[in-house]
Amino acid sequence: MKRGRTQGEQEASRPEDPVGQTAEEAAEEAQQEAEERLRERLLQQLSHQWEQVREARRREEPVIETGPSNFSRAQVPWAYDLAAAWAWRFIVIVVALLMVLWALNFFVVVVFPVVIALFIAALTAPVVAMLERAYVPRKLGSLLVVIGGLAMVALLLTFVGQQVASQIDELSKQVSGGLGEIRDWLRTGPLHASDSQINDAIGNAQDWIESQGKDLASRANELSATLGHIVAGFFIILFSTYFFLADGHHIWAWVVRIFPRAARSRADTSGRVAWRSLTQFVRATVLVAATDAIGIMIVAAILNVPLVSAIGVLVFLGAFIPLVGAFLSGTVAVLVALVAQGPVVALLMLGGVVLVQQIEAHVLQPFLMGRFVSVHPLGVILAIAMGAIVAGIVGALVAVPLAAALNAVVQHLAAYTDVGESSGEAAADGPPADPRLAETEGETT
Image (tube, rainbow, N blue to C red):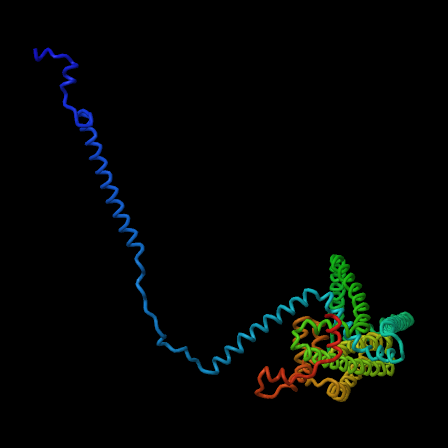
């Protein structure tokens, strides 16, 4: 009877929990609760470990106590400190000068004509001032001076060209005779050269001239570019000279306004001193050049050397290169005398050139340059040497007036500073401001 109970009775006889769940469901729920508690315990352990890690990271670094240093500043001898201060400043100045020289060399096609125009303006500025005192407007007077200068140069070149053209036939005959005399002197003179040696020397000279001609032909583009630079430089000289004469005071006022306000007064006076020194140098150079040219022309005329006028013009232009220019240009007169009149006349011409140079060096240079431009002869020689090294003939031409202007400016600024005076005291004792400069500043502002 008991075994024969139905399935419904068996299910009815199963024990039930108070909520109405079966024993299997209760066991499954208990297992889930155990797993949940295990999971929570693992999460709590992981969370605790993570908190420990974060706590270790959040630990503040150990505080390092500081205090005054027990080391004193390194002491070097005063001479070393002073030498180092001068050394780095000198390096900065040299680098700046090299950059300026590089820029000037890069724009030499423009800079050199402007410098020549500045020299011409310094020479002709008194003429413009004289015309202005005669109630001629400054711009018109400057234009008249420029046109008059061009006319004088054109007339001079025309005169020289006519002299050369009129004497070229006679010179060619004299050249042929002079070459024969030179050949005889080389054969019978102290050299005792043979005909073969003379012919070899003449052949080598002809080959060299032909090679130079071929090089010139192959450098046609460079020659055309050089001619273009010469033409451009000529017009730059014309326009720059006119504007320097007509608007030089306005241009200088603009340059002064570039300086800081506290330094404008001294910059203005220094520029005027430099301009005065440049004007005096150009006038003295013109007088020396004219004296050299006239002296060598007189000697050439006495010795009956042809092309006297051309030689005088060449010597006058070459004398603008100090110390050596007139002598180098005078050697052309010696060569002309050698070819036209023979070795004896050439030696006499050389003696005349040396005599004129001695008169210039011992009479004119000390009197004119010492009076107008206070530059020692050693300073002149060093300035020419450095200018020639830096920029060749252009540097030699510009070096001496630049040295004279710098010397004048340094002496001018040193007159306002006593030995041991500070920069503030020197600025307080500076020259008074130029009222014309103040008016110009007021107009611009």
